Image 1 (cartoon, helix red, strand yellow):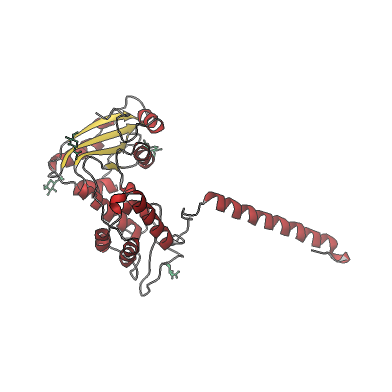
Image 2: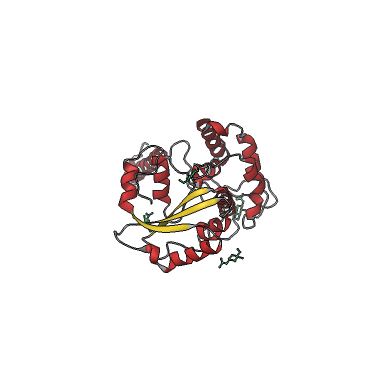
Length: 290
Ligand SMILES: *[C@@H]1O[C@H](CO)[C@@H](O)[C@H](O)[C@H]1NC(C)=O
Ligand SMILES: *[C@@H]1O[C@H](CO)[C@@H](O)[C@H](O)[C@H]1NC(C)=O
Ligand SMILES: *[C@@H]1O[C@H](CO)[C@@H](O)[C@H](O)[C@H]1NC(C)=O
Ligand SMILES: *[C@@H]1O[C@H](CO)[C@@H](O)[C@H](O)[C@H]1NC(C)=O
């Protein structure tokens, strides 16, 4: 930028200001591209940018690494997924609207492999990932595809809305929440044999009736298929006995009434963390769950 004599000082000020502005914009762009790899969703208030590409790529990645899954068709899965909510009011997408989509995804969950969690997301997923001895919903194809994504459509249009989608609690029947409720119900219905549940002992109500676990999953557990439910309360303070709390008593009543066998045990968070850092591959035994 050249400055004419008379306006020299003001002009310099503008060009310095301009350079700083450009620098700031560059730093922001660079740090954003460092934070987000190619396949990680950027945060928006509306539908995740490149939703279709992300979902289809995740689907293909998954069925490539899990050979028994090769009968799945990722393009058909995407079609069924978008048909569940496109053209609908984003506050009126019912849980059942995903029924057809759920049936297009073919996956058997072996008995003794299901891990449920509530308010222990990080440690439960880290444990499943490190040991590979159990699967959370997010380790199944359905959960893996949609993990961390956001989406909604709009009435009278077959387009996704990239500008604005309702938040998780903004309205009950938003597309994302209804999906997770439907997928969680499905995952719980498939559970068989022995099941592990990780709850959080650092909070007042490790068992919350309003959570997905409390409101959806335990209602779908089938006592004909489930042999035993191990409730494990992960406590950050040693010697805490969350299993004796009122909240766990409530859970016990519900499980007993549903004829489900279970027990509860408090486990130190440090024990699970040690196991995550030094896992025995394909074995859960680095934590004394029994
Ligand atoms: C599940 O675990 C129980 C108890 O350890 C065992 O008897 C049963 O054979 C297991 N089932 C499968 C399918 O591995
Ligand atoms: C329990 O919840 C607290 C508060 O949300 C969280 O900081 C902590 O990491 C959770 N503990 C486990 C084991 O997930
Ligand atoms: C997206 O949703 C918002 C909020 O419901 C709405 O105002 C807007 O018209 C919708 N469509 C687009 C294309 O942004
Ligand atoms: C107990 O189980 C019956 C059916 O098995 C069910 O209708 C009822 O709602 C349950 N009660 C509680 C408190 O969960």
